[in-house]
Image (cartoon, rainbow, N blue to C red; front, side, top):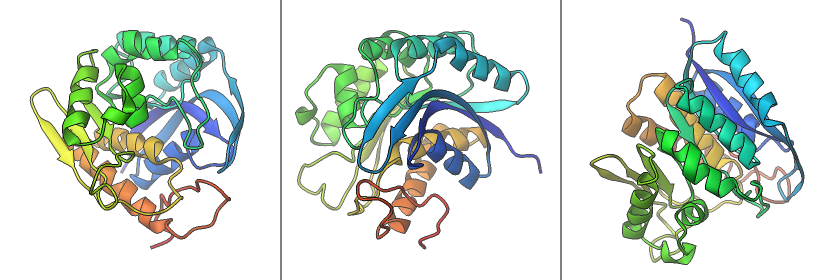
Length: 272
């Protein structure tokens, strides 16, 4: 049976834990053929990002054009877009109805704390790309930055739902706020994500896995959602499947020692 195809528009992680590399593994784990458009090359490992070299926006568009003219792309996800010009270029492609089932993971900062988006990028997301998205998947710091609120105020499900609604008003059809950074009572054992649809709020609970091997969880989650949509899953079901996939990948890598910082997750069940 011929595989479905999906596209990731994202940066390269030389340590292999996040970015294009995580997306490729995630698509493959779901049996989806992965195509790519590279936005930036990074020099990074589990401890730090030491260099970021963005591509020119027209070179990103050229990659997308090449893929779309030859592959039946059923879903698209974005990861690290690096600079405002690339954000705007991807938004223009979406405005032309060329990016099916667009999942926007607004990557602003790496798990090691390095900035991954140049000045003006947040405004480009707000004004141009978010209104084109079927779903956006910010973590708490990203949601706070995009909504212009204090991340310290995002402490429970109600506040996550409120910031998701604020982001939805920017034009996204749905918003998934990832609650992995929640530090309220109970957060030591639960990791709530809040999915806000047009007329429904869905709270997705899962156990919190105590591990430093969490590099690439956001990339993998959004890629898994895109894979689910490429396989004709409904959006809520694709999100549930993706959360279960990432939870299993965290469990599998829980005791790995790949690198001295935030290590990769177990996309293929090697640790189970």
